[in-house]
Length: 73
Figure 1 (cartoon, one colour):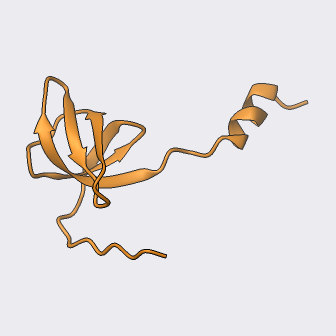
Figure 2 (figure 1 turned 120 degrees about the vertical axis):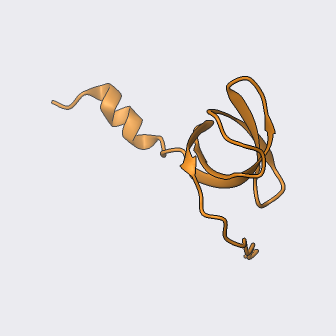
């Protein structure tokens, strides 16, 4: 028999990987501007203007500095 908790966790989707630009730096927390105009606060360290990847409010690493195209569907 499978673990009931693991079966439940499989129903919940994984948090998405987001990319954005750091616009504010605090003590262990940065503010990241997303391409769509939203702001999120994430744990980690980065410099202002740096592009970063964020998942579940934690900085996962640096992102490439590429131009962003937003296509609405």
